[in-house]
Length: 315
Image (cartoon, rainbow, N blue to C red):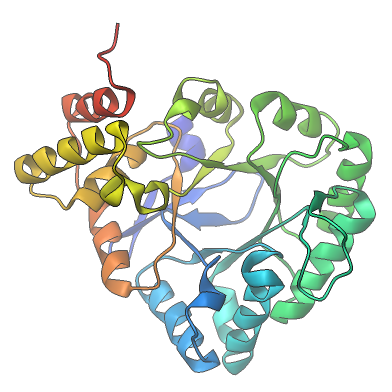
């Protein structure tokens, strides 16, 4: 099957595209996702969070990204409080959450931060996420980080059970290297449909170390977290950051695009079908990102940015 057939990009309102996961799966992701890891820091009331979710959906960004640990274990609860004000909204979005990290805090009694990918913990974490958000199932559950003590057989049994019980519609991973994805997939009876990894102009190694090659080969959708390198693309002062900033400014004038749009278009041009995870609660920035979907980045401009990012020409 051609990658274009697998992704099945379809234009929808405002204008937004969607990426269909593997053919046997029944859901898709919006071409851009919204990360809510800072939701607890924004100080929104439940009504304000609800309005944010409504605006995201109005703009076609229906995929929201969470994790059980976000906001000191509070972000899922905040989303749940908003959804309880308008339960019908749940059916208009894809909720992604992650588990497998245990952080000190959040009312738990852990002595130190650590990983836990045991079946018991993953099942309990998924059920806790459902309870906090007041929903019946997650559209996508990701294992947050590779666990050196991961028992692939045991974890696979837990994930398969969550899918079989209807508590999770699909499963994936986050920050896994290709061999780690392959190990878990070899034990699962369902496909891993997503690997959420860090990709940006300041972290382009996934384009060369096999991560995005694996995604293309196995038809795994890469969700790109920190697509603007935590803001360092525009405010950093290292040699590499300044090189990229200069190139972004040059191309901004040449292409009549905002620097943020150019950095986003650079990721979107990659043939793996990346879904960048945006993290700003400002709708104006969201609109800017959506407008990028209608813009085309020339190939030479793409390689100018790569040269700036790596500090050298291609061989």
